[in-house]
Length: 324
Image 1 (cartoon, helix red, strand yellow):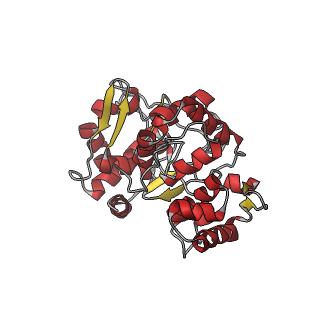
Image 2 (cartoon, rainbow, N blue to C red):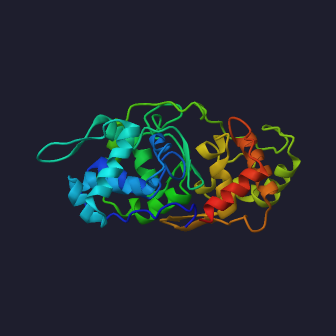
């Protein structure tokens, strides 16, 4: 699958706790707001433990209720689990309350899995999923969050791709509706935290005429969009072919880094819908880094709140992360 992140956890048990379900999904590098992977900022200074491995051990502790049981579940030593927890707590304060009978999450422990601002992991931008009305998902209804998790698409909000698309296909879509509702409830419980690097207001659809709106000096980007993109995505950003191809209102085209948009152009994407498979071809093998950067900057200027400034070097870096 696209994105190069850790494989999504295939969840089989029913009636799980919302926090645990969300934590398990994070091991698959998911992001809720618009395609792909989220990791907490508190991992930024870790050096001795791989980020995903630390998350895996943290989730095992939560699932089993003890350090020793977690170690047995993931086939590592108890000292390894203890060391991972200690390092995480050095960065994020106390995550777990220890008692003689069982371990439990602290408030910080619950926030740890969900309150980060946007980060880039495995080459994908993981957007804010707190209840912030602007840069988070506070403006989404419960049904919209449910639909995104269950199907990887919510009209007017975006379509999952990369690690998030993988998580939907291999994990979320196989959950019982009650489990997905538990996830929705947990996400709603996370306090709002604004992400200053994300716009609080998403841009509306663009004008129908290519001569109006979203003016940009990048003639190359406009030419590529006209040749390769407009037949599906339209000059307005609202697809007449399928709502899955609508880019207007999506967080990815309103992101000034254009990270996820460029990744989708490079690698393509595929969604499994009740009506069949909906896919976008990959252009990474047919277009240069310069061309992908140009069309990314054009699209964010036309359909987003501000033009991105992604460069050919940035695209080359995204390619290397996707290929891992």
